[in-house]
Image (cartoon, rainbow, N blue to C red; front, side):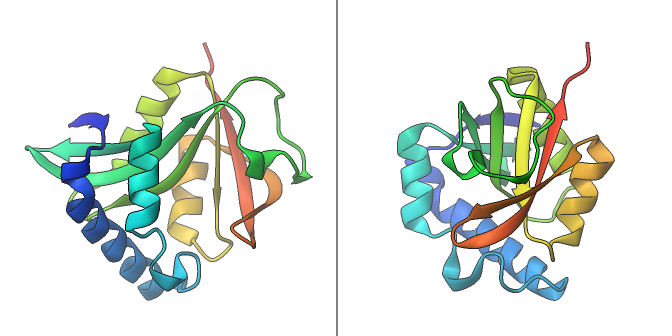
Length: 161
């Protein structure tokens, strides 16, 4: 498995992966987190332009996608709860896979934890599979943040030496 920055040539494949993820979420009781076609090509292209969108390649094919942002995330400035640390962090957003390989979330989390020793992530209260993945990895619940006009459960993870 390989992680690289997403490129313009990846847009159609990333669009397919996000469509698959929306269908998966809807089938698993979470039809509203990425409603209205979010994240669409506008978001994908903006993430590529910002240099924050990454893809996971498996056997030469893009199998997963995620945004990884180093530095403060404005969505995380206000939390109903408390973060476990107040130091520089990396944020994981819009993680999705095509469903062909198990363990993609763990692979992404491992890669992100190699980039910086403190991570933050959020997810919808109905996204039970993602909640399970972050808790299984060791993320700790922190409270609730507001993202794109909606409440999201917030988690953080501190890499232990």
